[in-house]
Image 1 (tube, helix red, strand yellow):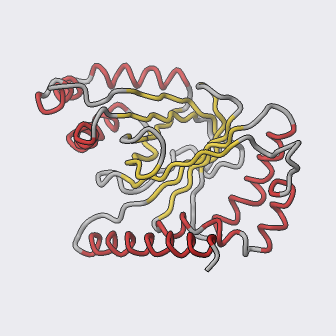
Image 2 (image 1 turned 45 degrees about the horizontal axis):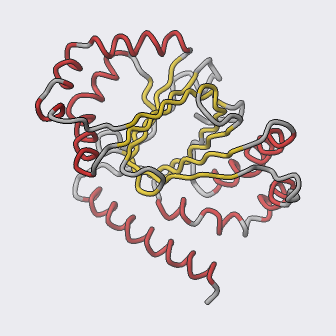
Length: 265
């Protein structure tokens, strides 16, 4: 068996096993949790950006939609390191759909034709520098991605992508528990548009979690965080001995993203 076939079969088998376990949990009365792949395309300024935008809009996103991966978020980095970069958020109820997507894409003639300029870019003029990826599972208390209310009308919106790294696995579990112990409700009361909350399964700098919030603009983002930090319920939660006996977050990455014109989120 060729290496690619072996890897594809192994990933598919693992995905099926995990999906079966998730289905069993859902059948027992639990919520069916989505999976998320977050991709980061490292680019160079110039024609490369236009080529990547065309590939994502005209080839990749339509093809992934045909595989049931939807809605897909596409964002440019507005505030944060390493610009230009494009972030792609791929949600799916099926882990298998995410881990076998590349195998299916190579067999999709419509995709291959549209993707040709990007896929066959010469080494001296590459379409991108590198692609990073992380795989997540939705939090039990927030099992589905929520599209901001203004997305359908293409209203003004920005997105905040926050990653919390923890100093140990125990601290990470405690931080996830903190979200389920009232933090979701405090975000909701303050008026945040929550998009997703994900526990990272595969990716760099583990253990960590990543979540995304949305706002009409930067001024609203700042105002809502002020409201959040002054909320009596937040002060009570963060001062609880269960969560403040030691630092349970060792590093926070905070990015602000703008949606691409073709973003579905």
